[in-house]
Structure formats: structure tokens, C-alpha cells
Image 1 (cartoon, rainbow, N blue to C red):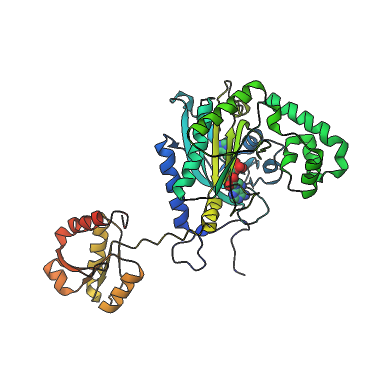
Image 2 (image 1 turned 45 degrees about the horizontal axis):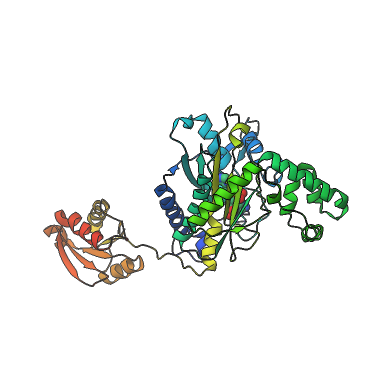
Length: 439
Ligand code: HAM
């Protein structure tokens, strides 16, 4: 039987593949990451990458032992003779903060802005936009507790969405307070739910012991109906003075910059390291339960991972597949595949090697391809057109002897004779006329 890819994973396909859609197009993924990178690097973020697998302890301490991610969704990595204590990373933040501490990045100017992109792994039930291997673009800022950094992080997320040309995105903004505020809220929730244990789903009963706030995130309709009936108060009601002042400052900056958001008084994030500002971006086309991305402040994480001093931090991650689904929902088409700048074909078998030499040399300027066997002129032109080539050079003995190339521009139809020593200059000239393509 033919071997298939594992459940919950996707192949990212080249242009021209049958059944190609944005979310499985390798080109669309690359374009999206490139667009986000432009926004983030203009804001001063530097790229930093960490391993795809890490000590399981990192995720347990970082993401939190009571989360679904740690309890149900970790992929464990085994290799011969190993203790099995590694896991495939379910998210990027814990690894980046570990690497920041381990590599002494505290010495760099603060706040330090980092970004990364890559696959993340969570053994979730597969659904549309919910994969076991998915990709994130991740942005983190370390070393500042200033509300201005929170507001800038949110504004950058909105800028990425704008740079992608997405319209229907809403920012849901909340605060989950400082740890003592959260403890007070959890205490309140225990008081509210304990008399109604029988009415709660099994999952939520379990959450009541471990982390009552997570009940608010329950997917059970009965749980949601119970909460509405009980009139459960939101987390925002429980913010202490400092967290409240911080949250108001974040909103003031966003208002000044005209960054639109909806206050979500009961936002719950699925990771334990958050405190204070927390937010998510949503899009109708992807569904209410599936955020395009989310983030928050995590001032306690570095100490959780062993740092003696506190390192304030904040960040966010977009789900790349979800952004692509949102673009698809808005009717965005696949980017047109780029063709080669130059396509070279020999007309006789003895000149195939020469044609290849011309193409290899032309690659110093742009993309160049060649035919691996001799072609008749008609076939060569058809092949060049199918590949979307801009220029075609057909090589016969006359061209080889005269050291010239007869180059046809498939866009304008013009024919030019170019000496081989002038080929680079000629191609450079073509590139200047079409800067977006072929480079
Ligand atoms: P998260 O909310 O768990 O946060 O994930 C961020 C985004 O990744 C989600 O909004 C979603 O778009 C995407 N995502 C998550 N799980 C899946 C999945 N199974 N399939 C497809 N996409 C998925 C974090 O991961 C935090 N590390 C974000 C952060 C950075 N907070 C601070 N810094």
C-alpha cells in the first residue's frame, strides 16, 4: 500500500500542482513569511531560530502543566538509548526565552525584539485550520515591561494583516491581570462553579481543580449555557490597580494610533505563562473558535525557566495556515508562478552542452533554464511559454561559431542578436525593466 503523509500534516506544493490552494502552496507560504518579515524587520526585530525539539521540562514549566497542550498534545521524541525526555515544540516562546537566557542575550540593547518562523507541533484533533504540524510567524520582545511595547506589538500584528491585504480581521483585547489578580479570580470561579459540579462537562470539572479560568474557554455548549445562566463575572473585573493602569495605557496608545480593537473582558489564552495584556486576532472566514493569531505579556516566564532575575517579555504568534485560509476566504488567488528570465535550447544534439553553459552563466543575473536535449524551434518556444519564460535563446551551429545569441523576448515579440560577452549586461537591462520578476 502506498505510504501517505501523517494525519494533521500538509505538503507544501510547487506552482502548477493539481489541487493547489493557498494554504498548501509553498510559494504562498514563502510570500506570507516574507511579507511579515518586512514589517517586523522594519520595526527592528532580528531573526532568531531555536531547535524543533526541546527538553519536555521546558514546555511543562513554560507553557504550563494544566494546559491542554502539555496534558494531551505533546509529541515525544525518542531515539536509541534516550530517556524520551524531549518533545517537538508546540510553540516558539518558551524556546526563544530559554535561548535568550542560555546565550546571554540580556547583554544586548533592550528591549530586544526577535522574530522567528517555523513548524510547531500539537497532537490535536484535525479540523479545518487545526493541524498537528502547523507554522507560526512569531514575534517576541524581551527586557521591557512598558505598556508602549504591548501596544506596539499589537499594532505590528495589525500591520502584518494589512501588508497581506486582509480586510475582515478583528482584534480582541483583554487583560488577565497579575498572578494575584488571577488567583483571586480563580477563587471566585471555584465559588461559582462548585455548587454546579454536576452540570459541568468532565473536562471543565477537571479544569476546576487545575485552572478554573480555563473553563471559560470550554467548547461544550452546556458549559457555555451554564456560564450565561450564572452570569459569571469577567476577569477584567478582578484586575488590581497596577494591571488596570497598565491595561489603560495600552489602550490609550492604540487609540492614538487608530488601531481598532474590541475589548474582550473574558479573554482566556491556552497557555499558562501569560499575565496582564492578552489578545487574539479573529477572522470570520476561519471561524470564531480559530484565532489567526494571539499573544500576550509573560513577565514571569524567564524566572519559571530558571532565571534569577525577572525578564519582562511580551509577544505573539500568527498561524500561517490560518492566515492563508483567511486570504482564501477573501477570494485571494494564488500568486502567479514566476517564470525564468532566460530559457535556452539547442537545436542540435552536439550543442546541448553549449546551451547549458550559457544558462549556467546567465544565472549570475537571474533565473535561467535550459533544455536537456535538442528541440525543434516550435517545441522550444512552446516549452519556454509553458514555463513562463521572458526570453528565449535558440542555439544552432551558426550561433556557436559566431559567439552570438539570438534572443527573442516572448512578451514584446522582439528579436535581438547579443554577443555572448554582452549577455550579462543585456540580461541586467531586462531585469531593470521588470524588477519584480525573475531575480
Ligand atoms: P497560540 O495562541 O497557542 O499562542 O498560537 C498562536 C496561533 O497559532 C493561533 O492563534 C493559531 O493561529 C495558530 N495555531 C495554534 N495551534 C494550531 C493548530 N493546531 N493548527 C493550526 N494553527 C494553530 C502561542 O503559540 C504563543 N506562543 C504566542 C505568543 C508568542 N505569546 C507570546 N509570544
